[in-house]
Image 1: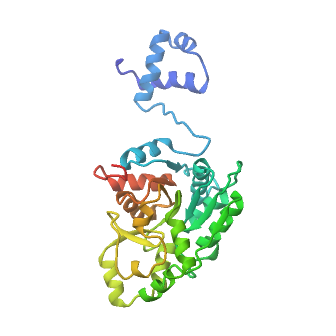
Image 2: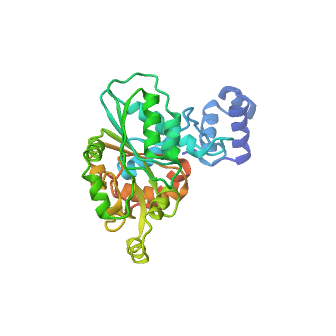
Length: 327
């Protein structure tokens, strides 16, 4: 390592090189030193933090965070959307764009693609523009519909819209996501059309799922739709739910929360989700940290698309002791 140099001299060399585009030979003449010494000065300026080099990906991704998430959790594909200091850019739209690109990268002929619901997936669907035609592509739902969330982010609407954009076939799951009793749910599960729709979901080649936290958004709306009694409410929260995927709740370690809520949901189970070869979690916002971290710890998702702030928050919360899906 070269000996430390005067910061003022290092700053002068850095300005000549990076701002005025002077060659190292010219800088050496100006500062009365050798060309090799100028090279060492520029390296030292970086080491002392006088010079910071930033590489901005034109695709709007933060690759260093993607690498860290992939290594920490053993993930397959990771896309982290750059959202800081970008005027007019909505975080959900940035995440949706990256999710749409991942979707198009993964698509192959004769694939079955399954969707859950939510604002992040809505942004993905609206950002999808297919440039290549795929044959025998099918879109299916992972979970029934929910009247208490806005119609445009429901599973049926997203499946239909994405199918139109991709020129694909689609199949609806004509059933609500939640029922008032286990008996009602079981009665619907006995219907051939519903049973077939869930079988299609279980056979999906890839799934894109929103990740919720039980105190926010559609995840909270699911719980409200159940009209739980106080005893049922207390029983559910005693398990300390951290998040949900396709209306299936889990704790901070990603372990499924069975019981009164799970028994009244009509959709793919977490066990069924684990059988899908590639489950892509799509989420935005720091509030989703507990849900995303639980899904990673429980090996519920194989790939992740999120924003920069959420990525940093998840890594910070994870510490150094977290395992991943393929660990």
